Image (cartoon, rainbow, N blue to C red; front, side, top):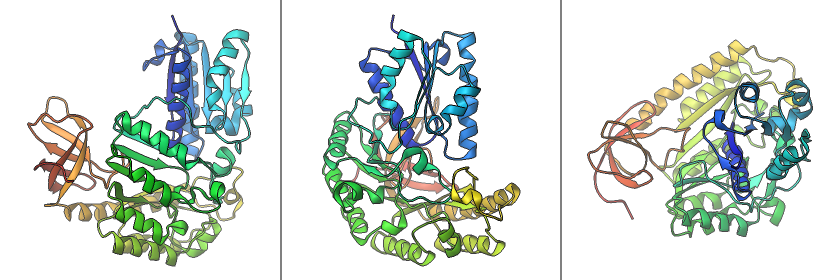
Length: 448
């Protein structure tokens, strides 16, 4: 019998794609898979090391699954991803149960690493230079439902925000060739993918390193021509690179969701400068106004950081008032996480945790009211809905509009006696609204 592998993925969607490639490689090497870690001969943990809470979750998961080497079948434990890239030396000393550490750019060596351990019973620490190019033309097994897939178009980041460790974990910005991305998208579409979520640490900079100029618009036009696709979703777009051309491409290509994720982090110009964000409050407002003027129904999501070092009460109030004025459609707030080896960690006037959390909670309460107001405005309107779930023993289906990304945004609840397939699009009228979710009823055929 072949060894059974259990793979646990922590962190972001970019990590998820890496895990899916590892699964594809391992399948080609005739390994079997299990969803039950207690049945696994080999356990792989793809970790996140972005902020303190993510590091803690990763370490807790490693320690928990390491116990299975004593109590269950597990004979090999492998840790990959950002935490392994950042702390492999320290972790190898602290957690002897781990047999191998793989970094962020050599996860594609997973089968070779397992073979070495099985053959030589050796312990391996292999965290290659994070600037090394990653080959993504590899087999991949989706862990998301087949109708939705993430498409990673670049690796790494060149923004060097002062609070962020990503460039040290993932290296410099490395775009994939446009033809390889389009080929992967076509293969995904042929295998049932209807919603393609375009991801990178910063998709707006796509192509600058390969072609000498930004190529996101050209990429999106080519993706829009793939017949089987219904939705193309964009995550994440930095405001300093959102051009008039990109806005035009989103507006004029019908498969591109009228949804954009723009992580602004703050609005105070002094804090933006200390964060090394390449924008200003005035420019952010200009970009948002352009988007809403050109695409009136566009959903704009953002993320903010409260408690950045030195953030005064006045600067926080400016951020609060900004959120109140702009009325983002979707919004998430992180408290500042002091990460070692980042410039912001050395800044004076670090903010106490209780103040960071209090400021976060104030903005989220404000956003709850904004979200309810925007959802109420949708009552009576008709949308295409992607059905993702049926609630057991009830005639209630759960789906999403094009204005909602999976797992982070709201859903639509639809009461229907019809037999609707999961992964199918239906047409529904919104009849009621909650703070973050909608309630709808099936009306007729899909829009063209």
